[in-house]
Structures are given as C-alpha cells and as structure tokens.
Image 1 (cartoon, rainbow, N blue to C red):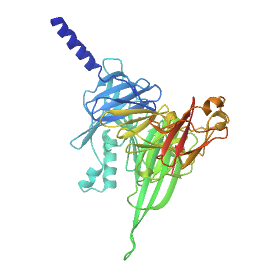
Image 2 (image 1 turned 90 degrees about the horizontal axis):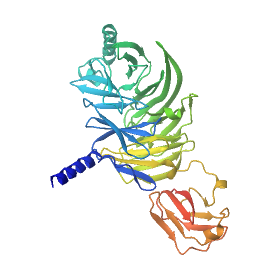
Image 3 (image 1 turned 45 degrees about the horizontal axis):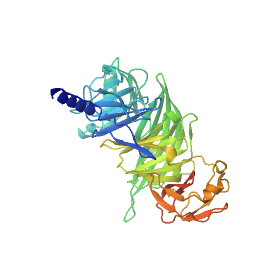
Image 4 (image 1 turned 45 degrees about the vertical axis):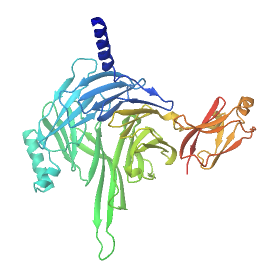
Length: 466
C-alpha cells in the first residue's frame, strides 16, 4: 500500500511538472493552448530559430518550440524587474527597475540548457529625468544641459525614462534617446561614450540598430481664432534616419509631412521588422513602408481605424492590424482588405514570426495562426482547378470548373463553404446542376471575412467584403 501511495504521489508531481508542456492543440486553421500562467507580459520571437520566448510577472523566462508548442527550457531571474526587453535574436534581455524615482538596468545573457545565466550588472543607479524635472519646477532644456555636463564629468548617466531604452551599441553598451539627445553608455566601463543633440522637436520613438538610428517625431502647433472659430492643430510629423560612425552623427534620410489634424488623433508609431529589411511608419489612419536597404518610403496609404490598431508585417506585402480580438489582413501596395477574422480569445498583442501570427493575452492564452490558412497573397488562375469570381465578392460568387481535370466527379460532388475555423456555413446538398461554365451562389448573408469553398477533392479561398 505504501508503494502504491509513493507511486501515485510521484506521478502527481511528474504531471504537475509537465503541466505547462501541453503543446499546441490543433484546431485546423489555427493552433491554440493555455500556458497556465497568469499575467503573461511579453512574448519574444526568435527569427533565426523556430522558437519563441515568454515572460511572466513571476520572474520566469521560458523558451518554447514554435512548431510543437512544447516547453524547451526556462530560467528564473534573481529579481523581478518593472519592465523587460528582449533583444532581436532573443539571446539577451534587459531588465529595468524603478525604485523611489531612481532607475537602473541589468543585462542578462540567456544561456538556456545551463544551470546559470551569465549576467552583467550595470549599471549605475541614476535619477530619472523627464516629467519629474517639471514637477520640481526646472526649465527642461536648462536642467538637461546641466545634467549632461555633470554626467560627462563624473562618468555617470543622468537621464532617461523607464521606457527610453532602445538597444545595444557594440558589446556591453546601451543607447538612449531623450528630448533630442542621443546618449551611448558603456556598461562595462560605466562611462558615457557619446552625447549628441539632434535638432528636432517632438521625438516620439526611436530604434537603434547596427550604427543606424531611426526615430519618429511630431510637433504640434495650436492656433487659436477669435470669437466662435474652432481651434486648429497643425502637426508636422516624419521619420528620420541617422548613421553613427565613431563620434559623428550623419543624417541619411528624412521623410516629413505637415498636416492639419484634430488634437485627439494618435500620431507617429514605428514598427520595425529588421528580418524583412522593412519598417512600418504609422500616423493616424495612414501608414507607409520604409525600405531599410534602399532608404525609400513607399507611398502613404489609408486604412480606416488604423490609428487605434496594433500592426504587424508578416510578409513584405502583407499587413495585419489588430483591434480587440479582430485581425484584418491588408495588401500593402494597394491597402486592399484581404480578410477579416474574429479570434476566439481576447487579444492583448500580436507579433509575426516565420510567416505565423502569434496572438496572446495576459491570461496566458496564446494562438498560433499560419498566415497561408487565411490569406493568399499570390494568386494565379492558371494554377487553380476551381475559379471563384468575383473575388473579393459581396453578394454572390460564380464557380468555374472548366479547368477541373476530374470534371465528372466534381459535377456529382456536394458543394460546401467553410469559415477558416471549420464551420460549414453553406451546404448545397443534393448538389445543384453544374456545367463546365459554372454556378452562381448567393453569399449576401455571409459576414465579412474569408471562406473556403470545397467541391469534391478541390477547394479554393474567397473573401467577402462590403
């Protein structure tokens, strides 16, 4: 009896240890699992490997296999940070701490598969300067000038906000941007390498990568009119690129726009996709691509409600926006809507990795969507046995079977239309009379989105738009 109890306890502990290794549950058009960890704060993709990383508020970083969804390894941080940043290759993370108006950071090199992680503790603790300076009544510009002079003299970095970190500059260095100042801080030597002022008002966001600095900006000018005329807000916004060589900062590229905007519209977001050599620059309901290799901005395109959406680039010509649990797929060069799908979970954020979309929320619910299951970017009628026209469509579709090699089987097969989640929404059984010229099917009652039509062994995608 005692042996049986021991075996049961052992099995219980073993199952508990593997409780987070359920892997993906295949739902056909998507894969899903509940990671069993509340307060999932961050997911980081590894573009070189088929892996992704998660971080929870309990201070544990986990690495997962992308294809199977199984847990591969995990490490426990020795202290829980206020914010965490994954590097692009997910080999290092930067931990940020905010304690009593002081800010410090720590670089941790992730060595999964070993008992310990190699960590570099940086970092001087330094006072946070941003909104805090305004509260104590200092002039922002004068106070910053004083702080930078003081920082250079005493080899300390007295600036930054808890979210001002951008990336690394060489080995063991951190790069900061704050109110027009670029600062490079040597972590190992605890010294300030470079401080440069950039003449540009309203810097909103910046990214540093391999000696190239990108930042977006907007500068608002409020104009008042007498009597009953409404106040107007003029906004100048744009994207800049600088090249940093030793101590020289050279402007390489500039994209600037002036516009008249209501004050409540969101301005200037940058999404970087270095693995695709692309950057997405968003302002209100407009977006434009930036080709990082050729320093070329593709013409601005407009998408409704883009200002409230989170964006991802999956392929060079595919843009995905997320609002709540709804994903919208757009063709970039035309801004045409290709598909709209409703996810079965509430989504806090999405990211793209290896032609997949990962959607997750703080509950630990995570979905993996293969983009090919929802959108076909390249479409050639010559390669299709079933031709659906028009596509996209709103009221009806016509099915053309003239290229079907087994036409006789198609003519006697049932016709069904499915959603991406496998729900049959149209079932034409018994099969209506078909000819080689085709059949018209009423789809006016179907919601906007993508569907699959299946006839025998053949299937094709089509999109319903309104």
